Amino acid sequence: MALYLIGDVQGCDGALQHLLDEIGFSPSRDRLVLLGDLVNRGPASLAVLRRLRALEGAAEALLGNHDLHLLAVAAGVRQPHRNDTLHDILNAPDRATLLDWLRQRPLALTAEGWLLVHAGVLPVWTPTEVLRLAEEVQARLRAPDHADWLRQMYGNEPARWDETLQGSARWRVIVNALTRLRFCRPDGEMEFATKDSAAAAPPGFVPWFDVPGRRSAGTPIAFGHWSTLGPLQRPDLLALDSGCVWGGQLSAACLPHAPVADARQVEIIRIPCPQAQAPGRGM
Image (cartoon, rainbow, N blue to C red; front, side, top):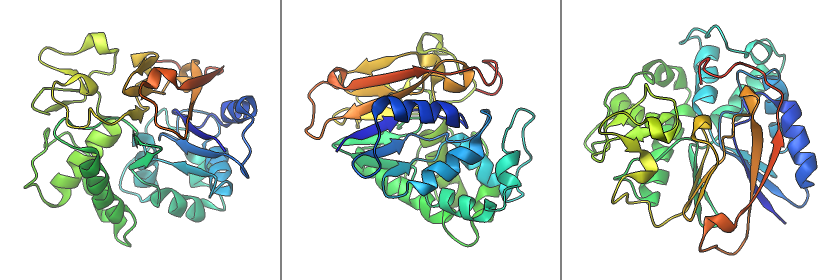
């Protein structure tokens, strides 16, 4: 049995099939965890959701910012963006089933000693706190009145975590960190405008994983979301968004069952992807 972590697919079902063929994936033997942004900008978001739902039990997926955007558009609380490619899902006969499946997906997971998130983790959070806070938002997404929360989800404020935060402000910080974060200050203040590489950090900000004293530093973390970061495989980190939808690659990491002392020992499989959209358009 093998456990594969897969980076941002973003509706590129053909590339996902190619990658599964490349790794020799068997649903009776292996397990997949996709690190969020299953849909949008690629040509076949509907096919991706149908594939993953059919693999339930052998495949899990985290929620990314594009997946939450789909849920908000479907709930009627957000307008589609000009470059969205969500119409096939929104018009599908099995729309309700697929959207309900998507709402049940987690925002964070642990597997084989790894913490898995779509985007990032605030420096003050321990892995245990990440999972606890993710569960707060997951409960809101799974509630009958989830559309009310989706309506309040958007915004960049509050920009930093405070345990005393309550309600929508609290959940917004959690969502923004887990699904949108790239750069933050050492005190945890988040910045969302910059989408370039780590070298492009605004003054006073650093990549979230480079904050000194980060409380999750003792646990290896795998994440996606940041295609402009480039390949990153450090002793405690794996970045797996290799820009498939922009004509880059789709990446899978094969996690060993025994904990590894150095994540650079983890095997990464990458396949080339046809370009579905031009870089810079809503990355």
